[in-house]
Amino acid sequence: MNDTIRMTKQRRWSESKAHSSWQIFKIMAEFVDGFEALAKIGPCISIFGSARTQPGHEAYELTVDITKKLAEEGFGIISGGGPGIMEAANKGAQLGGGKSVGLNIELPFEQHDNPYIDRDANLHFEYFFVRKTMFTKYSQGFVMMPGGFGTMDEFFEVATLIQTGKMLQVPLILVGSTYWAGLMEWLQTTMLTEQYISSEDLQLLKIADTAEEVAAHVLNFYSKNPLQPNF
Image 1 (tube, one colour):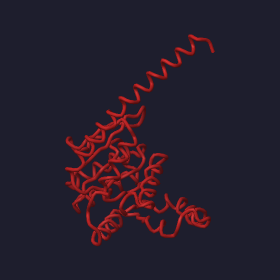
Image 2 (cartoon, rainbow, N blue to C red):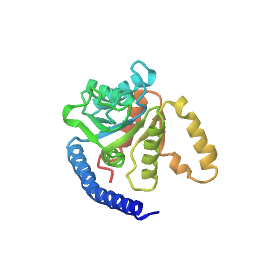
Image 3 (cartoon, rainbow, N blue to C red):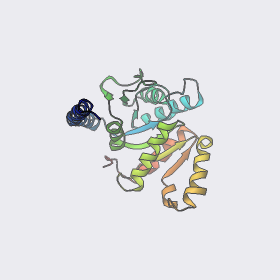
Image 4 (spheres, helix red, strand yellow):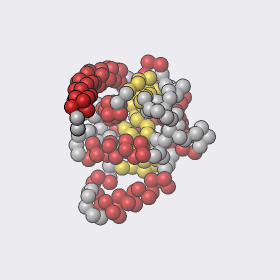
C-alpha cells in the first residue's frame, strides 16, 4: 500500500468516526421526540404484519375488525405507519373511534404513510432500533398478523424481551391458527424438545382467529394486571 492510498484510507476512517459521533445526537433526538409524543397518547396495542397485504384480503379485513374492536374497548392502535396490515390497523382504529398512531420508517421500498393515521400521531424514524423501542415501551399488547421477515423479527424481539424480563409481560397474540401452525409446531417439537426454551415460554403466546378472541385475550389479561409502560 503506497503512502497516498494509506493517507486516503486514514482520512476516510477519521471522517467516518466524526460522522458516527454526530450521529449520536440524531439518535437521541429520535428517542426524545418519540418518548414525548407517545407518553401523551395513553394505552395502546401494537399491530404487526405484512406491508404487502392488500385491501380485500382476509388478513387485511380481519385486522380492520380487530383494531376497531380494540379501539371500541378504549385502546389506541399503533402500527408501523405504512401500507398493508399497518394501513388496516390504522383504519380500524379510526372506525372504532380510537387513537391511530403510525411509527413510520424511511425505507427504499414498500413504506409510505397510510391515510388513516391521526395527524398528531404520525411519527417518522430513521433508525429501526429507535422505532422498535417506541413499540415496546408504550404498547400494552402485541397482535401479530401474518407477515414476512420483518413481522418475525418483531415477534421474536418482543417474545425475547418478555422471556428475559427486560419487559413486563403483556398479551402476545398470534392471529391465524393456520398461518402460525408450522412455527408453533416447530417451537414445540424442536426448540422445546431440545430444551432451548421452556414450556413457560410457550405460555406467553396466545392464538386467535377472530376479533372477539383477540379482544378477549387482552381484556382478560387487564382484568388482572395494571396498564403501565413496559420498562
